[in-house]
Image 1 (cartoon, rainbow, N blue to C red):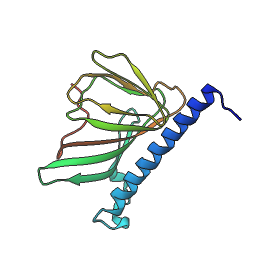
Image 2: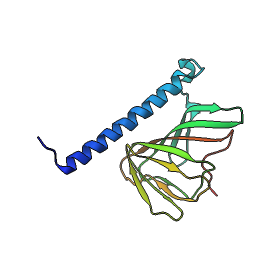
Image 3: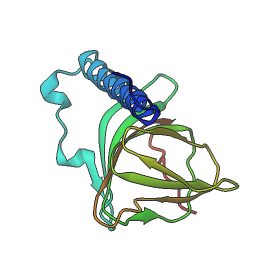
Length: 159
């Protein structure tokens, strides 16, 4: 049986999504497996989660400080339906992976982008981030973000 061109493209996208999810799961598993803390100490407590006044929830899943005073963070972020940020910027590059929902993002000088579950993207360092929001009026947006900053420095800076 021969598949249609559309089916072949869909299968390719599904395979790529599965590979990304397996890779991400492996990264998370390795982060926990190679941690010097016992598993019970790695369990997240309410203090590892910050919820903003607009309902955006950020849970730090992993934090590691190197000898140069830089802190790597892996954060699970949840945006309620229709919620977004004002114009802001980031002090460093970040890698993001959409787990659920849809994100809309735009940097100065670029067209807006829509990103769906299974897609990844990079935040730019020091560039004005004009739009970042969950454009869906009924479903939440959930994504992982990994970045490095100087210890104690925020990643999200609103002018």
